[in-house]
Image (cartoon, rainbow, N blue to C red):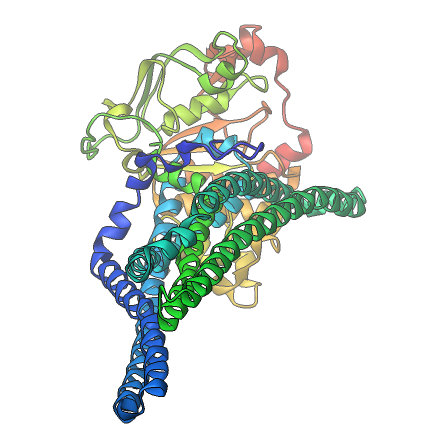
Length: 611
């Protein structure tokens, strides 16, 4: 991480390339940004002249007391000055309110758009990224990062310009009143700036450790909640609570160090500011007694010395705040600066060929470089020079030992990865010339753990087919043999599902997944261990739906089990990343190879059910 746990604020946090990613968000709001800056500058200018009114009033009072003939005229001028001061302070307050509203508009609008953009980039990341990143960790960092960037935008707009103008005006007016008092008031400033920079670096280091700790902690909580049934069955609730408390205690210890460091540096800066104010007050009083300056000049200079460290402290707080927020914001800025496309591709071509799903692998090889590079080992080929051809409409069973490359083969077909060597064609079109989203419109996948989201049954069946009509959804449900159990539900297709479809059995979830696949009407269907977690009776109940699903389309059935509900036209045996065997089931049984040695016929009772 650019911000190390040791408390060093690395300049990489402020790299220009990172912040350029925010330009498309802020540029359309340039009018409101300019307005916020202008309002802040105007409010700062009005606030800076306040001590001048006090000087005029005090000098008028002293002069009026010593010269009785001019007393009435001086009092009238004093009343006018007092009225002017009231008007200036009122106008300043109104300008500050207007600036706050304008800044918040920019902050909230940009944060809303930023969160959508980050989510879009997150979904576009390659499958391998999501497989190696914890969901809870990732969401915590992104959520905190978006909030941090919104805070940075707000702080910079509301504090940077007004405090800078205010500081420059205070310094100029103090110098104008008395250069000697200005030197005294500004003497502690170098130490003040040093404390600011040093404190920001220390706080940023602590903040990074805290952010990382919370992210890992909530990653663990997310994992536990996603497997709460297993945790409860193993009696692990107390263990998880104890682990949470242990990690949270470590985070709070670091958080306390952060709070202590923040308070220490703030106290040091406060002491330096007090030193500057007391120096101006004491030296100014001595100058008054010597007749070098008027009492009004002394009061005004003391006021400016007091106010001088206000905008300086505001700028210091903005700098420290940006440094601390950058610990969380770095994740989001990296997402925007490096969007990480899912796969690299040539300019996409149209995919409107009249084919029905013929698939060809030509000497395809693939390795997982990130995984192997981290271990400093030579690449391990997940797929090694695999070639085959699937005719349109064929049903192919892909079997083999666990870790042999079956799932990687399908990931390549879905273009989650691109081959290192060789090429893959569908209906004669190289997949590299197709955008992933365009390719996947013609494919459907039914997994062993079907994805069911919160929403109604109809929403889940129509997922990915937003324009499907109610009639089409009903037809898909009927074809998937799901209409019977849906009719028993309180609201039918409009019955809301809990997270993950917790109210449904495994077989019911799979039938909804099959209905979803039917609704897509794909050229190519992939069944990846679709019946792995079902008992024999539930598996048999899906037989009719599965047979209807694969009809008139290319189907690829991935399974560890050699007894399948579907009779394939051919079987591919994949092991150690290579195509070991291929052929019709009868031919492979006669060849005394892997399939023949591991084939287990269905039990007679199940054969009767399927007949």
